[in-house]
Amino acid sequence: MSDVKIGVIGGSGLYNMEDMTDIEEVAVSTPFGDPSDKFVIGTLSSQRVAFLPRHGRHHSISPTMVNSHANIWAMKSLGVKYIIASNACGSLREDFAPRHIVIPDQLFDRTRSRDLTYYKQDVIVHMSVAEPFDPGLNDLLVDAVAETGATVHKGGTFIVIEGPRFSTKGESKIFRQWGCDIIGMTTIPEAFLAREAEIAYASMAHVTDYDVWHETEEAVTVEAIIATLNANVEVAKQAIRNVIAKLAGEPEMMSHSALASAIISRRERQVVPDEVWEKLELFVGKYYS
Image (cartoon, rainbow, N blue to C red; front, side, top):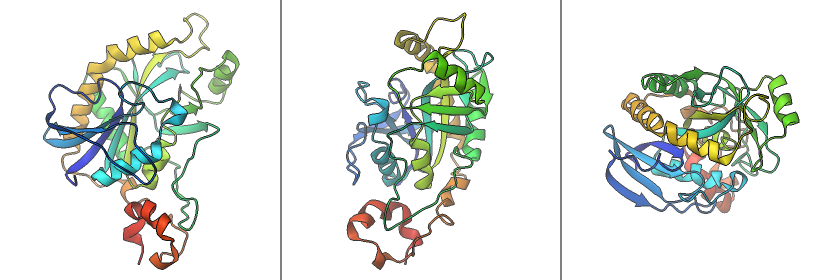
């Protein structure tokens, strides 16, 4: 599977693109448990691409219960170097309207019960996430969406809440005062784990609603979110085709060497217990003697 360099994490419609060829379904076992679903691997724009539905193909996994550790580990084991994530989000700004697409460059974590790292004992990593999305991949994704003709916003702070409930009006108004631009329930810990795995990660965030702060708009509903996502699905598919073509030369990006200066533990295999090494060799093996 080493020819699979591009991963897409999304939902229905984003792992079943009509022009994919040489399609196979692959179940990947990981030391962190099962990924959200089987991977659908196929050829698109002459590149091998691995698609994974974040919540399972029947949307049966709650945001907090998504096994991001298994999802990212499995992507790495397939050879993935770049992940394009598709996310639904609410807008916290008047000018970020429903059906617009945002390529965020910052994250704000308001989750409470999620495991945010792979490195908890024996191999300790202090990872820089000042730029939580890979800047190089972000730039390519902005251009890829712009080429579809859709309205795209470059940059923005994505606040991630625990879910699965939506925000109260009080919370939504405070998030606006904090300077956040969009709000959702996924992306964390995905983005952090991808960086820890040295995979370049970017998000294509689809604005579905104005959250609940907007006094003249209807409150967010599941029906409205699904309708907007369905309306945007062809844009999302074309943007993915566009960005895959731009990655044909496998450009080197900042995330691909993120661990080089982040490991603080002794870099000697003999000091790492076997059960820890089994989980982490895929990421750190090249840095250990």
